Length: 139
Ligand SMILES: Nc1ncnc2c1ncn2[C@@H]1O[C@H](COP(=O)(O)OP(=O)(O)OP(=O)(O)O)[C@@H](O)[C@H]1O
Ligand SMILES: [Mg+2]
Image 1 (cartoon, rainbow, N blue to C red):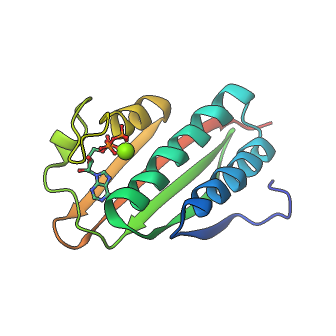
Image 2: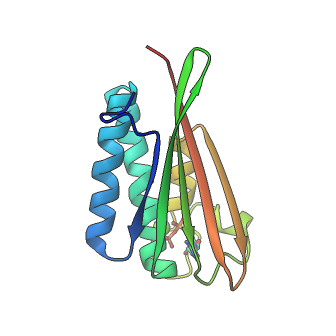
């Protein structure tokens, strides 16, 4: 269970301080859900990358979170949504080193490595949705 029992919520991503806020909330939620310190760090790192991608590439958007309960396991699902320019070629965007802003291009491939599941949906010119999940054994 989470601190106050809430199983879902959302946070805006508009300013840099919102990225920090997303990190904080997800650190607390994933710790309370029962993830170990290493997994918490992985999840928070993924949040950083995807929240920053929204801030840099799409200007603004939001992060939705869900705590998922299944027999014997607990999971966290994070959905990063924006109405920005979209990702024209998702396969290309997932390649290590690909960046349209001369950055490192390690964000998306890094997130894939850190999480159990990752899915990108995007319509060029209309926005992007990146969904990630991580699972832990229920305590
Ligand atoms: N939310 C988004 N909206 C539009 N384009 C995006 C979004 N997220 C990623 N992209 C595109 O995918 C590319 C790859 O993203 P990735 O995070 O891997 O690299 P980066 O952000 O350019 O660099 P880094 O994250 O290493 O600083 C970006 O350069 C950008 O073109
Ligand atoms: Mg990035």
